[in-house]
Length: 544
Image (tube, rainbow, N blue to C red; front, side):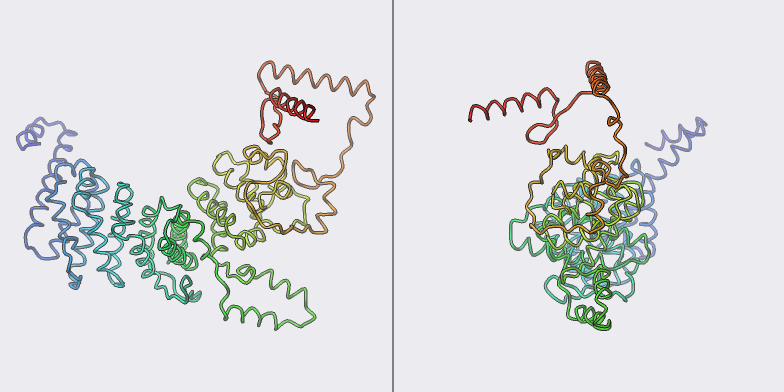
């Protein structure tokens, strides 16, 4: 808008129009003026003030349109030290200018499609990676790293082409993994094992924010990484998984920040090829083994039951393996269930991760089976009633959200080694019917995946109660009198015909459709199921 047009609207006297034109005119002019000032050689404090105003103005998309040019973008790149290959970031006085320039770039790239296109043309992703390398192992410039990473996240989110460039051309996977290592101050004790100080201080707010931004950027870089084709890729993913294991075992400055940190770690672990997730568990160290043995040795030799209790209560150890990370994931999953909302976004990633880990890694599955589905003793309540993890997951099997109930049922099914009879024991037929119908297993059997053949052992309490357990509800019921025991044969026939007529009427009015099981275990209309069985019988007779 030119000056004469703006002056005409002001003279017209309409208050709303005057307010809009003044704000629009002044903001655009102010932006243009700021860029003209930033070109000049001015004091650092003046640069920071100009950039702070520009950052606020850059939140308005209307203001950005006329000022988003290649020349203005290059001004911000120069101030953010993104154009200088040899600058080692030695001048601490310039750090506030760099941070504010990166903040402005974040707003502009997010709000302007023109800026997004210019980012590709100016090869902004490569410049950001170069700046990250300058910041390596420099903890006092965490703000620079944080906003550098945030801008990388935005670019990889808005442009899928940048993801492949980051992954292969710019070596983004090892670079961003090193950023995480630096944020967590990791000290390696083995190739894929790090030292964990459980009594150490929590992460600082700056380190936590930096780690979260790196996790989000890594998620975009690895979003299509389900298959590993090279040994070097496998090694990189294992290193990253080991770093994420360390991430799960540390805490942030607040409970909310810890949850956000772990949530992003879970999302990233979902992108790691399942074959590389074996590093989430590791053999006990000599110190841990010695500590466990000392605890047992302190008990008298005749206290066998107490020793067994100590072993069972050590929920971090299973079969000589350290299960701390898996235990953290399990607790994280339970907290998300207890929230009672946003299950699809908050719960399904961790449930899916635990399901895939259990399917691929025997020790993880057996540990989770012990934690989630311990041997049944009290079967007086329905499986969905109670406060245990098993009760909560069984309740999710009938959730209104199809995706949530499918992944909850799949997780329990995998823990049961995809055996229908084992699943029904813990959930009841009614809760499991949806999964079994979808998998074609209503008639029983097991899934397609192979698991070890070790048998589950039932407790004496369960064996005694088993004859009286209702298979549909999955809990113990007192024997109920059979209402037809006192009927004559004529009454039974009458009631049977009455039921047939009612079903026939409902079927003809299409209020319900009788269904049957096909030979492969899937559901189909009853007529089609009967026809298939007739064909099978005729074929069998011809063969005989």
